[in-house]
Amino acid sequence: FAPRLKVMKKPVLVSSTDGVGTKLIIADLLKKYDTIGIDLVAMNVDDVVVLGAEPLFFLDYIATGRLDKDQLVEVIRGIVRGCREANCALIGGETAELPGLYEPGKWDLAGFCVGIVDADKIIDGRHCRVGDKVIGLASSGLHSNGYSLARRVFSEEEIKNKWGKELLKPTKIYTAVILEALKKIKLKAMAHITGGGFYDNIPRVIPDGLQVVIRKGIWPVPPIFKEIQRRGQVAEREMFRTFNMGIGMVAVVSPKETEPALKLFQKLGQKAYLIGELVKGPHEVVIE
Image (tube, rainbow, N blue to C red; front, side, top):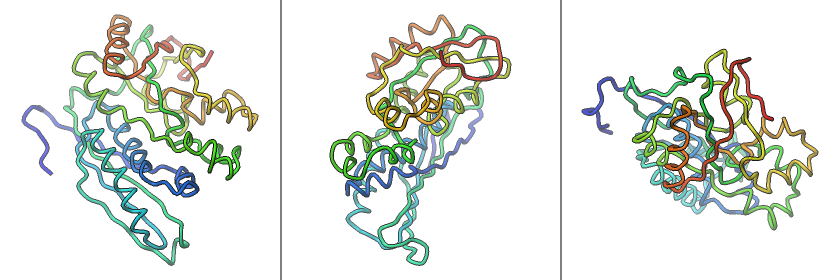
């Protein structure tokens, strides 16, 4: 693979590896495998782009007890679609048939992505200041986290019928939108809202001494989250720690960049909301 290095003064490689967790079980119940590959790509490329890096290439690893060629074709089809959405090359992978390790019908999926960014353009939150604003980008649903809890509140019959389509909805890929936005606005920090939700992911990209205040009610929370909370009698704090609650990516911008950023994201077809701000205080997220 030959990356475009001429336009960079000091290129830095950024990498990510991840899977899709127990969302695979939902795919198995529905016997539908053409979107799980999109989830796999999303979980990796969006972990790379939060540093301002452009994903270069992607590899996949599929392990199974017994190879199902039809299923494999569908999974790969989703991976290809995801890579196209992220403008990322799919350069290879490994399919391992491990009958002594996996029972027939059992399998797992992992991905690996490498991206590149110029050193002076790395986005790591160091320039965040009191008064900066937090913009939330709408998610497409559960994405690929919280499925162990979700599966406990829905029966297999409900998953196969009423709720399956919603639970298997592909993870939103933000990479193309973010890279386009970076051409016109300055994003000081970004957090991909995956496992750990708001409380664990956002503080990682914010300097010590700053508190992130998120205000509820500004964005619409998709019904699936409310249904899971109601059925499982899950505390609100735990919901925001486990799920994305309708916000799959957050970005921090200066006050003067806020309105241009919101308008730009909308122009790019991405729903975006001003959901909070940075204040002086303990290094944590407060949702009020």
